[in-house]
Image (cartoon, rainbow, N blue to C red; front, side):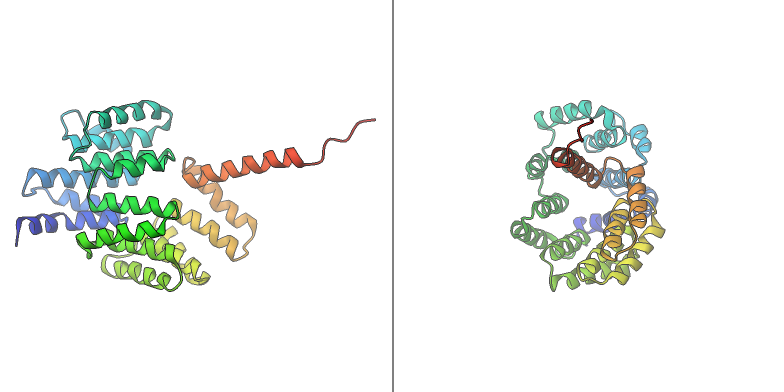
Amino acid sequence: MSRQQQETDELFEIRNYFYIGNYQQCINEAQKLRKPTSPDIAIERDIYMYRAYMAQSKFLVVLDEISSSSPPSIQSLKILAEYLSNKSKKEGVLKQLEQKLSEGSVAGNDTLVLVAATIYEQEDNLELAYRVLHSSDSLEALAFIIDILLKLNRVDIAKKKLKEMQDKDDDATLTQLTQAWVNIAVGGEKLQEAYYIYQELVDKYGSTPLLLNGQAVTFIAQLKYEEAESALQEALDKDSNNPDTLINLVTLSQHTGKSLEVSNRYLAQLKDKHRDHPFIKDLSQKENEFERICQQYGPSNPIQV
């Protein structure tokens, strides 16, 4: 077995659990790996562990443990934790990020690339996110690029980027997940193929909200609403505040003609726990625009006599 294969095996469970959205198991596996074979492996282990804590919104762990003496790639995660934990201080964080990028700190630092892209995406600046991602040739950077392309409805380019991922590592869990995203975007017969990818990962590693939501989206697109509801209820049982689950439940409620009260309940929960989510921002913008149009074109106040 080559050194590269050993490294892959050493971090396989940690990396895999992170990508399928089983963040607690990712943390558990990272803590089990107490004696990695090299310092680089130790750094990568900690990167996944801290990212898993952030995925659980446990930002204080990251902020407390990462210091100026931490490796540069791990220090990058502190920038993301500061941004996500306190959006009121985002201007300072953005300046700090821009300074690091201008210093050329991005060279060889795949974690900083992902951090920068994540923050720019949160800021709704997909162009900057797309640009910075090209500083890395990692599988995860490619997957992020494909995610952005799908948001921009550029499925044609996304397919080409997916081919690059497949050429790098066709069997990787991240490549499989990205294949499912592209299949969903293509639609038609590809929806069933996307479902099978998610199901295979569930069979191998157990169900997670991420995988169950993926299945639910394929079901909704195929008008299989009962199957979608079953998957989403299971996802809700695993994490009652998962934003993707709540959004998909709102969508499903509308498709199945449930009362407005049902969808509003999920929407209220989403606003309560994820007020900065892009879905909520977009919805608020549309509500404000609708209100403006109503005022502009609505009947004028009657003249009082």
